[in-house]
Image (tube, rainbow, N blue to C red; front, side, top):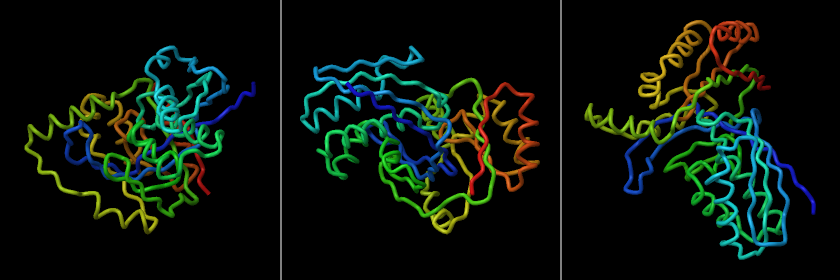
Amino acid sequence: MKNFVLTSGCKVNFFLKVGQKLADGYHLLTSFFYPLSTPYDKISITILPQDCFELDSNLSCLIQNNILEKTFFLFKQASRIKFGCRVFLEKRVPIGAGLGGGSANAAVFLNFLNQHFNFPLSEPALFKLAAQIGADVPFFLWNQPAWVEGIGDKIFPVNFQLKDVYGLLICPKFNVSTVWAYQELDKLREKEKTCLTNMGQKHKEFFSQGMLMFENDFEQVVFAKYPLLRKIKQGLVQQFGWGGLSGSGSSLFFLFKQKTDLKTAKQFLAKFDVLSYSYFFN
């Protein structure tokens, strides 16, 4: 039996506005997603003749109710192909960091299964299935910069690439629950009687023209509970570059024009207990 090894990256949000809550519990949003190849997870797969699914991981907490299991059974149901899988997930993308690591796992696995079995699902069917698995999964099927709307299922690829800038992804050693973040944002808006408007649309042009805008609705609730994140953002934005919270947190992402600024920013981070990843986009 042949073993296949896949790599699964992540994403950052340069912009995220949260709209109304729907009856099914999801929220409407407008956001700009940008894929990153690192950090990444490794997914080792063995196709089995018997009808079963076996999952192991370097993190035992990920074995139960894993999104890969959900992906496997939904694909089998949609394709009507009988087979089994043995999967080992080597998790490197920080969990609960707003990087979409689990959604990326699902998309990479789904793409692999469809290709391995000679494309039983058309592209529209594949994207429909991806949306059933999770809100961010359709984005990772394409894995290119995109403006995202709806609940994350309406994806509009944008011809946008970062050029001649340095990036810094910062991941504290704690996670932020996405469910908690949405609940807290809903409570805050109810308390303040916030009038929701579609603020994201007017900024769509910025990204389509290659311009960046950092804004994230979750910062107000996440920073209130985790002041370390506010402190890091204030320290970096005031001195060097621009950036902010990615997704619902806990990761932060910043861009710098000069390599010396990136170096100084990393020196600033040395006083905090965080992981960081550096990039040069050319």
